[in-house]
Length: 79
Length: 260
Image (tube, rainbow over all chains, first blue to last red; front, side):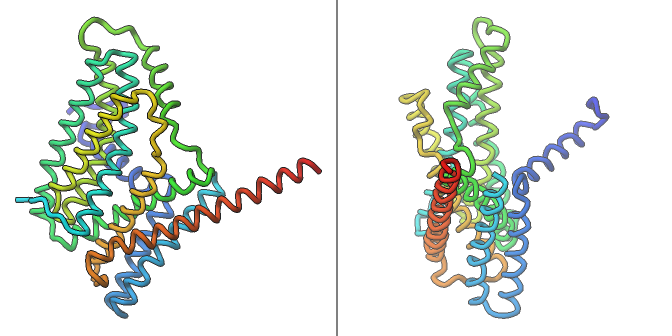
């Protein structure tokens, strides 16, 4: 198996490139949005299973809006 | 066998895929035109066409496999989560650009830089130019990968892969036709507005499908998607207005301080 200058084999480099692609795609320079997505899905799941589906469909868009506003405000301070 | 089905969610899906593909195609077209102008049209067009063929093969190979092997609820959660993050990223960027907190995507500047970079390379020999081919292929392929992900995620989850692929192909043809006419005036396309619209739709689809996948029963079923688009659109509008007003106040304050 051919090695690159850093000693990695071709499959290892492909794996690393694949990982980097998805990391950049989903996390990139907005890690807060990735964390927000996990929180939104977690809270919605808990509400849907433990409280009611109405609470879940009301809470989910509200959490999405909160995540967007928080991330925009963070971007405004950084920009 | 995947067939084209048209209902309310299919219409929103078609618009989302069309706009997302158009935005990415504009960026790809800038690179192809730059390669064509500086390295010759034959190699640039061949590079762009080769990338489109590879992207088409990816959709044709992965789409049916995903639909066949992945359970629908798992697919909805994973795809919904990806669309939610991706849509929020697009929407955030579009809001920051609309309010001046982030510079707008300048296709003219990108075009000028591409041409400058390419003209600095070794002169092309007669016939095919490998540099022009590679630059056009890479540009179209990299921009197209995002389109492929959007087509696959939206198309497979809604069981409407044919319609999603058609909408993407239509966007590619229309943007290419516009490119032939306007060539170097791509900066005139309202890219940020399109990006904002796509962000709204991706976030709405993401909320709807990830919600359905984890057990949320949306009122009105598929009709909840346009309602979510309207809700997120109204919030985005308010955020843009509030940030613009704040920026104007800050500018006035700085002006008064400088005068004093």
